[in-house]
Amino acid sequence: MQPRRPEGFDGLGYRGSAWGRGDEGPPPPYQHGFPARSFSSSGDLSQHWVTTPPDIPGSRNLHRGEKTPLYGGDGNQPPPGLGEENSATSGDQLNRFAGFGIGLASLFTENVLAHPCIVLRRQCQVNYHARNYHLSPFSIVNIMYSFTKTQGPRALWKGMGSTFIVQGVTLGAEGIISEFTPLPRELTHKWSPKQIGGHLILKGLVYAIATPFYSSSLIETVQSEIIRDNPGILDCVKEGFGRLVGLGVPHSKRLLPLLVLTFPTVLHGVLHYIISSIVQKCVLFFIKKRNPARNPSDATSSAQNILEEYFPELVANFAASLCADVMLYPLETVMHRLHIQGTRTIIDNTDLGYEVLPINTQYEGMRDCINTIKREEGMLGFYKGFGAVVVQYTLHATVLQITKLIYSSLLHNTAQ
Image (cartoon, rainbow, N blue to C red; front, side):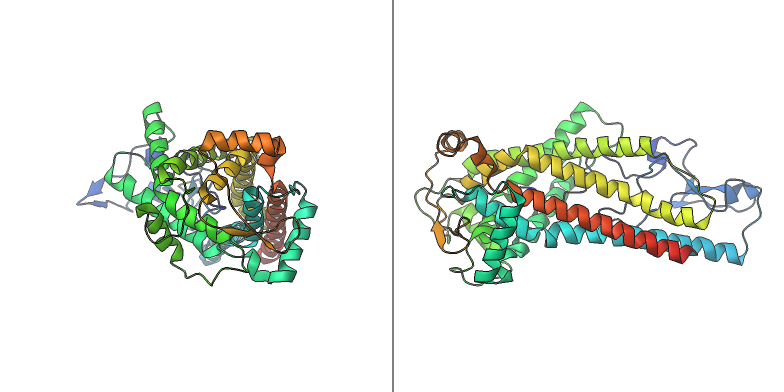
């Protein structure tokens, strides 16, 4: 149910103002709705401000308690000269450029480069006929090559537009529900059990709303390119509403009602969010403990620190998403088989790399699906297509490392 790119996991974090985090000192006074500012004393020059990079995944300032002085730590220092101002402006631009570039590379990897792995992973999960479980990344690469050779590269990127639509529906529903209900969209660092419960209820409602659209997106990603027509951009939305009201969508008597699909979908989504959030916080804690914040004196170390400011969050997001996907892979297999049942979907033969196969399962529900897979395919049947996960995260880690090296070299040369 989760999009490939995790949701930023900002539900268990906090991105509020500096005064809301318990920093020392009272907030600045306000006059007629605007902060009153006075430059009558030299102490005002030492007022601290927090520089925030562009608010995209992978570019947020991770050092929540740090403060960046406007003119230095000593309030009695004179204002900097023109050269120092230009240097500060250049450093801020490098800071934003590094955060934006690394975050953009991560988003591109999660949503574009990794999509062929998602397609093969889902096709293997719903293919109960398959004798080859594709647990190894080498067999997945081989079958990717076979599909590309027989159907063209387009076969590996099918349904990518619908995955973005599902992400949009999820984000929109979360914003609307949090706006008109007391359910918190984000949690402060001083959370309470009641706030966590309300936050998880909000996540569950969002996944429930997105369930019919997720079903239509799943069909687009596993449907064979050989027999399907070119889908429109909004077909996912149209078919999702059709599935919701039960009109306009071809189905058989084996089609499971949405109420049966909602429970495993919500369960998978909420568990994925909880696991990934916990892992992310733990990884960030250990990284911060192992590499404490430094105050570099030379320009080269300062440029390197720009990368060190953003890269730990990307590493934490990577580890969180990987752990959640691995731990919940059996549940995801069950969920996908229930979603695809009765939709008259025809998938590619993942054993041969050519030909097509119909999906004709007859599961009565989640428990029956689990028992049937265990009885007919064994415990490894829950991990069909797991090699695609290995390929996906190996590719992601490689792109992150290459991006870090490129920006490290670029910032080093710029600082000189």
